[in-house]
Image (cartoon, rainbow, N blue to C red; front, side, top):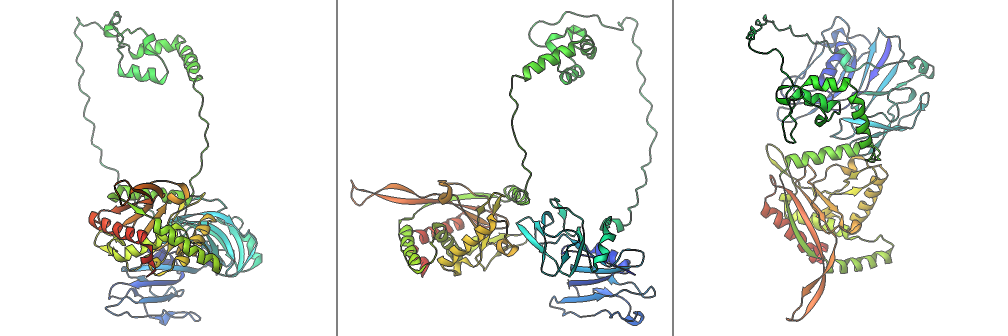
Length: 538
């Protein structure tokens, strides 16, 4: 029998599993059962053919959720068909099957992988292998543009790339959709030249068409009243009304608008000089259309045409647009702004950078100090380190700070994990490394997932004085950092004054999670760390 296989990714619907099992395919399935009843029912392995291992069974504790690992082997036609329980979440990594009705040799269908929890589709950015190339485990097949970054997709098994189903540059490929075919033997490559993979929808039985609704006989048309002999059959043209207003029937106005006919140049023949459809048609038949078109063209030629270029949306641009639109439409934002004096902060930074230069370390930026202060403030006011759900507010024990990074492809927010526990030097190194990865489009899922709070700094890089950022869902708050500026402040005496540098920061909050007083408390704690930076070193 010919050998076939399919890659099914996490979050695939269970109906795909049942389709495979009905066809007698073998599968490797991992799932978590959520009920006490057996998730799998089938006959004993007494009828299994030699060479196939029986189904491995594991029971689960009534109080804990235990992962079960089940292997299905091809069943003989005399055995009962396996049936999956309804209450479990399925994660299929690979499925291999045998089909006697196919003339194709052993092969593997490689599907679009699910590379992040939010990924539903991806783009093929670049193929690093071409058809006919030998592939080995660990070698990069292609680059996949996900909703977060561009990720290298590695080959899982040794073989040959027989066919590229989705060409380089293919867009919006659904997770699980076949993108390539690999074979074990080199001589089998040519047999897949015209191969078209079957989609799961092909195996779905057609839906029964609903019966056409019963039609009732239409009611007879109302009888038209005969016009009295005294009523005229046609109205004679009347002089047009005085004034600037032009009277015309709706149909005549629509026809005139579609034909670029000025109503002011037409004499109406309807009641009281009203312009009717026949007047427009007569005007067009007499050549008025050509004259009007020439007049319209001459008028339009005075307006210069706009020069523009259409830039296709990148995957990260579409995801950013979707998430921020969702945020503004569903999260009740409010904003709190405070000015923090940064004179002591700049002095401490200067001292630390002197130590760093002496030891050969990298310089510490103002943004590194801001990230550290934000993390410590979240530790002090954990209500801001939370997320809204329909049933509860989830308060995180980890303090993971996303840092907004702008690139040519769009906005990325890589994460510094456990920022409250890390030193300034470590935070600086991680932020620089993550920013470089973002610019190179090489962020991995672990580089941007798991954030609990976001910092966006447009002050230092761009000199923006103050702005309000959009909350990054599902987080409850985001800090917008402006540029520091010198200000005149009162001195000790009545005629004395001093200069001080102040940095405005604005906290955007989800009012469902963070009340105004809580947001103010967090800003107070953050300002305390900025104005007394030595406390961050304790």
